[in-house]
Amino acid sequence: MSNYHIKHLEEYFQVYRKSVRNPEAFWEEIAEEHFVWRKKWNNVLSWDFSKPEIKWFEGAKLNITENCIDRHLPTRGDKTAILFEPNDPNEEALHISYRELHERVCRMANVLLDKGIKKGDRVCIYLPMIPELAVAALACARIGAIHSVVFAGFSSSALAARINDCECKLLITSDGSYRGSKTIDLKGIVDKALDNCPVVKTVLVAKRINTDIPMIDGRDEWLQPLLDEAYADCVAEIMDAEDPLFILYTSGSTGKPKGMVHTTGGYMVYTAYTFKNVFQYREEDIYWCTADIGWITGHSYIVYGPLANGATTVMFEGVPSYPDFGRFWEVVEKHKVNQFYTAPTAIRALAKENLDFIDSHDLSSLKVLGSVGEPINEEAWHWYNTNVGKKQSPIVDTWWQTETGGIMISPIPYVTPTTPTYATLPFIGIQPALMDEEGKEIKGKQVSGRLCIKFPWPSIARTIWGNHERYRDTYFSAYKDMYFTGDGALRDAVGYYRITGRVDDVVIVSGHNLGTAPIEDSINEHPAVAESAIVGFPHDIKGNALYGFVILKEVGESRNRENLVKEINQQITEHIGPIAKLDKIQFVPGLPKTRSGKIMRRILRKIASKDTANLGDTSTLLNPEVVKDIMDGAL
Ligand code: WT7
Image 1 (cartoon, rainbow, N blue to C red):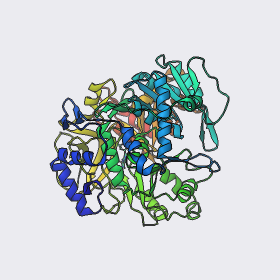
Image 2 (image 1 turned 90 degrees about the horizontal axis):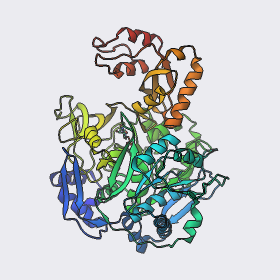
Image 3 (image 1 turned 45 degrees about the horizontal axis):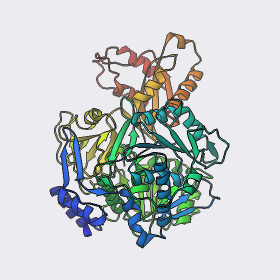
Image 4 (image 1 turned 45 degrees about the vertical axis):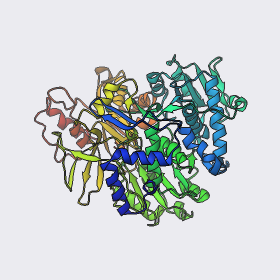
């Protein structure tokens, strides 16, 4: 039992050693003692990173919703499972108990069954942060359907691409959503997307903003009347531990988004175990993660991890700036939040505002502060620590990825001494390695390299939907028998890790993982554009912002530049979403290319971040003269 909840540093080292010396025995014990299985596994782990093939708890049978809901009913039936805080602070918060959650999930599951959804079918969920979102995901899990949640900020074409990639038969959405003082016509976006998605036969529409919207006969149906009629109990489908639980898309450095596939047993065990320890969650605590369930953070640490522990998890519909910049702190005070988990970009935005927004609220309930999504810079770290935590609440800087399913490197609060900007120590069971460019491991302290993981952990993604080869190429081909993260990291004198950022063509903007290639593809579709290159540059709120270098076609040369900038951003918004808009667009006569025709982004990155004192070796360029032109016109 003691291994489940780590309480001091010595214990961490002890348990860590155990988890690394004999991972199978370690995870078997955790899985055995803290979860309910319909049938135990025949084999704890089999793996081969060269294929790659990873199987945890093979042969085991379970349903994750029985672990997240049913098993709590006898002891926590009346406890709040989901605490819904609406966008409008004047609308009452909703306390959904475990019993009520059970009923809601069962009703939704029965509606899906009634619509012909079966085990293994894909269901797309495109919803704002309202209870139906969590309920819909859990309802899929209840019947063994695979959910694919698409963040409701994505555009219609991004939504269509995700629906088509995994061939979702059914889509759950809402009539619209609230976002601060605005409303968004979600159903309009859906309708546009579905023009290009012949596989979707049914659209279930939740009511949220109560506007009149067109409903397409034979395809669209209001959700609530169906739920009202549905039976309030639903037998859980018995799943294999390795059956897919969900698909979640993440952008790659090239090509279309990757549908990361997470499976059931290992994902459940790892997200629950990390949740318990990284947030030091105790029975009476109120836990709040401000992420959207459209991202992995929300899947693992709003829904599955917390609910598997019988926790109370806050679901917040709103934004940090509405009705004013004190909203987060108002919610913390109102619900007496104990663990608060947010992103550096939010912290930096709030740090720009008057401290009165914080000081007018009682934040004394807070015990743990979390950060995720990108490196947290020193200034933001101190601001968070001093003003939110009053130097009393440890900050857990949690490093992980959509692909890893759960937190990989993080302090354990009140256990691991923290250092600003350091994610500190690997979590139990995680075996990081720093690699050099030649493929050799860099051992020892005070070194840096490319961050890899040597050994599988239970919640690693198993494949990319429909493209196992891409899964192998992206994560397992750079270094033999290692999972390559795409991040660079350093290890300091005490063995703490600090993530230094992406080493590939992915830019993290406001904590969102954006591949540059899809954005370039979008820009290049503009009739006036010949070619483009996108790089990230430091931004004081977003962490990184996007800088586009654009070569115009002859037809574009005569066009008004300001209008072109607007049109390009409009196009990106339509193709990908507003998060991918460019902060700066510079029109250039050419792009620095290697002799093999590859754009030398290293140089563009330096120009974009005004770090041109040492551009490095440009002698291998095909067109070195273009560099000076670009520098002269830099924004
Ligand atoms: C990339 C993964 C994990 C949920 C949110 C993002 C960056 C994430 C940290 C951190 C430094 C971080 C990495 C990683 N990242 N957390 N604490 N410190 N960098 O998930 O969209 O899959 O992005 O986010 O670069 O590879 P994601």
